Image (cartoon, rainbow, N blue to C red; front, side):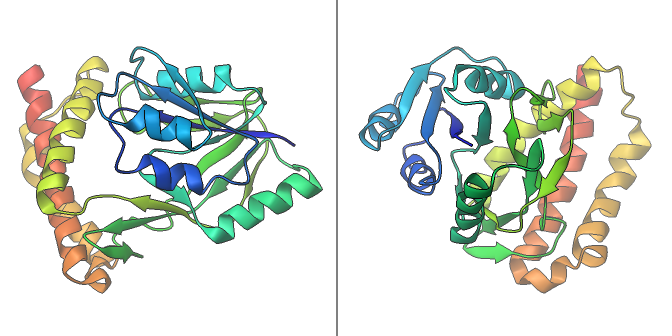
Length: 245
């Protein structure tokens, strides 16, 4: 079982070294860069990664194209702001020794937000299929929230992907601005209605769900920020979709 790790990048010099250095269990590291103007490519090449430049195809399209360029059929897809935990890396080493019993594997993802690891708020365990046989799986999703769909059996790994998210609220707001536009485009492209009542009632429900039902209050003030930002995201997504309509 040989594995190619794939990472898509655009100006990720802050994160790329951490991601690559966590991938010792992989036989190849492939970086698909879409026009970085910082030191992303330079740093990746110094750490032994194979770097390819390519135009933007959308998140799913970019990740699928990266998988097609890999030297091996087993793909471990990682985002630049992620890294494998030591526990997950050990599980993958063991999997390589014993051989895969499934066509894809999901793993929990744990986020670090404003300097704190988040264990509630609907953010954890946040399982993702990231290790898969490209002959059986591919990414789906045209705009945002792309995910791997596997035609076959999926097993579970228990080690965490570590997701290093926002270090500041201003960074979170900037991210929300970007992703709500994509989410609104997705709604508009599918002719999904964004009635006024959803814009009014979904945000407070989203806050209540994150902070109370998903126990965000146990994540301290960071949990409160997550719930508020989730509500803001929901409002902005529908507001933009209505404007597009």
